[in-house]
Image (cartoon, rainbow, N blue to C red; front, side, top):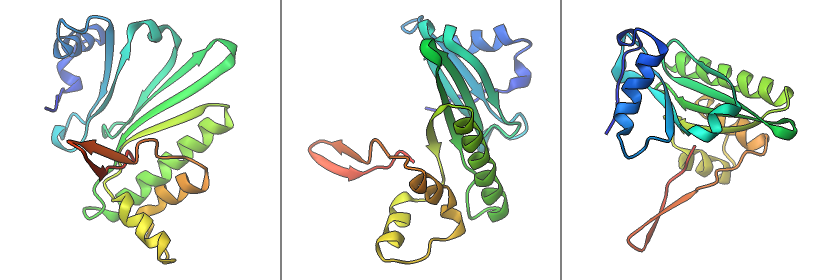
Length: 178
């Protein structure tokens, strides 16, 4: 069940949070939500975070893109522990290959910059390309296509898919988180 909100329907930040809190329902009063979507095309974008209220005091910055395909939250904890959480929804590769490539390039720059600034980066989202197909190419010794650039980057920079399988009713399925 997807929630789609237009930024323009919220007259202020508090109005937006009130709408999101209503979507969370009365059973989740200890959480705050942040959402980013494209006002002009709500059906092609939308990413967000739901954060427990006791962690919001550590939030330093929340950033999103105009097209609603990216949101990040920077946390600063005691002891100078810095984390950047990124949630992304890649454009489909088949529709606008250059747009998909540019999006990958921009995301890689953001990750590189965050790492340079001392952040530990946690990346999640829908990359709109199949990780299992990427792995097949690697195992076969084949060259990977440009659409897999983000996976090449993550692999070469020691990122790890922390949930590579999904179990349901005793069966295990490949279900990659990136």
